[in-house]
Image (cartoon, rainbow, N blue to C red; front, top):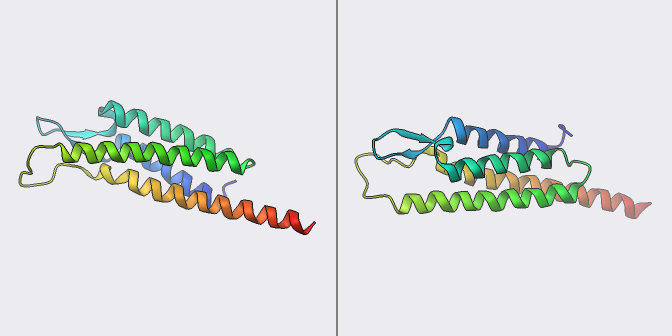
Length: 136
């Protein structure tokens, strides 16, 4: 399980989701206090949901089709999270001297790329198994 590259990609996605909740800033509130992912209900819910889905997908290594579908669901959730961050960035009032959007807004982009790479590796594994079955 852990020797497969898609497991590594999915583990990094879980790590990024945890970092989004507790490490990376996703913006500031009206008082200028930095907001983490755990402070915004939608970000918290979607990050935890993504973590749970990807962890389940990691342990579905014997059923590659399930793993592929779960990763697609996680990608969809990350697109919703990215849309939320874009909406929030566009609805912010005018810029001040510094940008107050936070680095956490880029986490969904990296997660989407990593999950797509994981799906690509899962597809390669599935094709390899099918080609071996054809030979027999």
